[in-house]
Every structure is written in C-alpha cells, then in structure tokens.
Image (tube, rainbow, N blue to C red; front, side):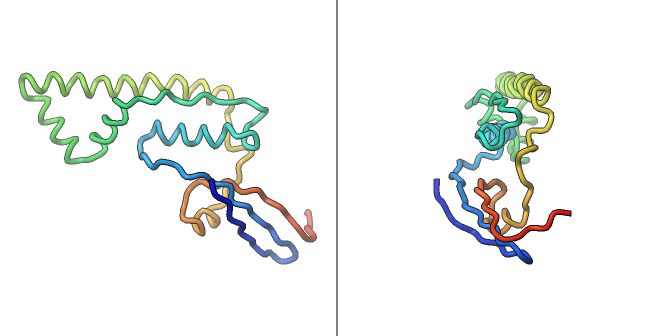
Length: 151
C-alpha cells in the first residue's frame, strides 16, 4: 500500500485526497474482477448497512479456462480440436467444466445482489481522479476545507 496526497481546488474550497490504494494483481477474468470489487466493497467505509458480501471461490481451472478462451485464436483452435476423436472429448470436458464453474458461482453473485441491491451507495464515481492516476479503482480519504454553499 502506498499513500499520495492529491489536492483539487474548486471556487472557494480545497479538497485533499489522500490516496490509500494498494497494488493488485491484474488478471482480466470476470471472477477476479468481481472479487477485487468485493475486496473494495468489504472495507468498512464502503459497506452498506455494515453488510459484508461473499467473494467467489478462486479456481485455478477457471483461471486457465478464461485465459485460453478469451484469446480468439486459442478459442478457435479449441473449437476445432473438439471435433478430433480422442483429444476432442478431453477438450469438451475441460470447456464444460469451465462453464459449469462459471455458472455455479453466479448463485453467490445473486445472493450478494439480493442482500445489497446497490453496493456502490457509499462509493464516489470520479473518473477524472482515475484518469489522473491511470487506474480504475482508488481509495481516497477526503478532507474538505474552506466554505461550501449548499443549495
């Protein structure tokens, strides 16, 4: 984890943002992204009504399935390989297992969505700050100084 202070000046107020972000591994599969969001949501400042949400079980088999099938060339080769007599059966079982793992994890996602319909309630969407820091997820401790007008 590292800390960096960012100040943004608006008309009569200064907002200080203390960056509390931590480094993460960058896998690009949906389960990893969901778990990363759950890590962010389950911090005390982001939880809605102090409800913790469940993460998805990690699966090395699914990670390899996603890595291979997300590449169009590999996906094409797998689909062609399924037509081969002996290799095809193994590939078919591998693909079927990956799909079953994916859909079995959806029950956790649906349970979480039922428990907390809007998990973004305590989060702030600030794309300009993400653009400045070249990331899509940041933790900031916000301190507002100066006068503010409330309309």
